[in-house]
Structures are given as structure tokens and as C-alpha cells.
Length: 412
Image 1: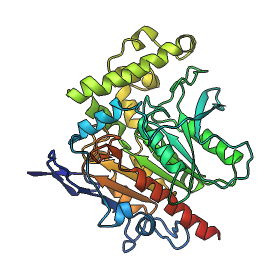
Image 2: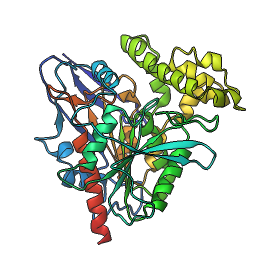
Image 3: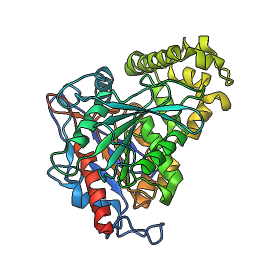
Image 4: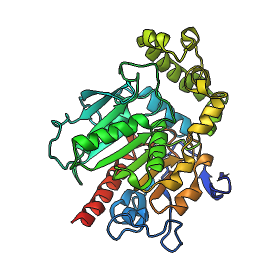
């Protein structure tokens, strides 16, 4: 049995995507690439990525076989994780799992922001002394909402990039948002899905401290939304050599609508996990939040039951309501303004970052961007194999290596 998903028209180009019903036996799903085609006129005059590359597609074709090679560009989901909800749930429930792919120890650094806030950076391997003349690439990672450097998929990515057997090794630094991962709150301002100022400060600080090291950004979920907004805001002035967005929501309003529908995943997994993290953060930083001029209702915050309740009491206090905040925080419109090599990886069966909100039109019109879309994998899942392993680790490493190799060829 097959159905089709119609992506809305206009900027989000309408195109049916075949979705095959999932079975318990292993089935491979091909990667669907959405990119600007060199045969089409580009709205960006005189564009050139690096060297002879006039679009991201040429870099993908040359360096990313897991996304372009017909024999390799597919994903075979773990047989017992045969739905988007199961893939997503496995990711959440195994967040603290440790195995040979993820068993790392971070070196923590606390950073004061320009507005008085505090961000923690977790380095793997340990950071170099300030000013160290090292050209090893630095990959700056942002987690999703209520996430941290200690999540399984982030530790797996850090180990994969730092210990590459093929391609160049990287240094990985994970940015923990205000109040997350036991980062102390030093002001009443919380992180949110819209404000990119903390990430901007961190990137500029790294650029100043390690001037010879290329910087690459990787974002997961809400972190991907922030990365996308940042790259669109910066345009051609971005100091990042590349950006990679994993399961980016693009439309935060659509995400909020999706996660507030009644379902077993939303009611028993998604909201309890998020609200528990919010309450832990609020309890650790109770005095700072209580004394803030923002006027938080701490009793109400400690009793929230869902995402919209928390956002209404915190991030949306300057908006008409939380739904207005979600609309203002979306990143879809920013894709068209990106002038940095950018790869997004999304899935059709993601229960939160819904596929219908992906701005396909922008990806087709902007030669700096590419979308790898898979029919299966859920939200931050994409587990493959009988013993679940994360599929996107290879595409991410290949893309970083490809962009940096093309960039180096231009410099030389």
C-alpha cells in the first residue's frame, strides 16, 4: 500500500513523495536530494561556492557517496524501529546510552556572553590553548530543545568526527544553551528558538581564538532551526565554512501544532521528557528566575504539562501568545538568504519536524543549499542495522570533508 505526501505550493514547492508502508523486515529507502540544478538559472547573480563548484550538488557528487551514489545512497531502518514514532522514542529513551561509538569525556569551558548570560562549551578532544596556531577544523554543535552535549547522538557525532579513519579529523565543541547541562543561569534570560545572539557570540569568539581553524556548524532540531536562522541572517558575511541541519523544524508553528495533537508519543514521551527537563532547569536556577525583572510565575512553571504551557510562561511573554512566538521563530524564510554551503537532513515520518513545512522551493532556488530527504527515520533517529547505529554520521563527515577540501583547493 502506498500513499503520497503533497508539499504545499508557493515557496514550498508542491511535489508528491511516495511513501511505502513500513514492514518489520528490513527495507532500504533511497535518499531524495533536493538541490539547485546547474541547468536552471539562479536568482543569485555571480555565485560561486568554492573553486569550480557552482552549487552544493557538485560537492555532493564529488565527495558524498552516501548521498549520491546509487549503490550507497539509501538508509535501511532498524527492523524493530519500523515507524517514525519508534525511531524518535528510541532516540529519547537512549539519550544517556554509552557504547564504543559514544564513550567520550568532554573538557568543559564556561563562556560569558555580551549580555551577562553564561554558556558552557564541551570540547572533544580537549581544547587547545587560546591562540594556538592549529588549522584543525572546529565543528560547533547545537542540541535541540532541552538537549545537551551528553545526548547519545551528539556524543556519537563528536567521536565520529574527532576520530575519522578517512578524511580529516576535527575538533568538536558542543554549545550547551543557557541553563542546560547544568550550565548556571546568570541572568533571567532563557534561550529560545529565535534568538541567535549566543551562537553568534560563540562563533565569533572561536574565530578570534583559533584564527587558522575552519569553523563548521551542526544543529539538531531546535539547534538546527537556530543555525538556519543564523546563516540566513549572516548571509555572505558568515564566518562558518559550512552548516549542517539535522531534523530542522523550519516552521515552529507547524511543529507546535504537531506535538500538541493527542497521540501516545506526544502524551507519554515527548511532553513528559521536555517538561521534566524544564522543571529540573527551573529548580536548579529558582532564585535567579524568581528575582528576574521578566516576572516569571515560578509556581506555574514548576507545574507545566506541555511545551506550549512552558513557552507561554517564558519565551512568549513578549508576544501575544505562544503561537505568535512560534511563527516568529521559524527558519524557513531564512533558507533563501544562506550563502554558506548548507546541508539539511530530514525525514518524511518525523512526528515533530513535519515534512510538509520544508521549504523545497528555497532549496531548489539557492545553489548554496541541499536537502537530503528520507522517507523513514523519525525525529533525530535514523537508526540503521540490527544493533542500531546512526545513519547520518557518514553523510555529515563526507559533507564536511567535501566542503573543506573544495575550500582548501581554492585557497591553494
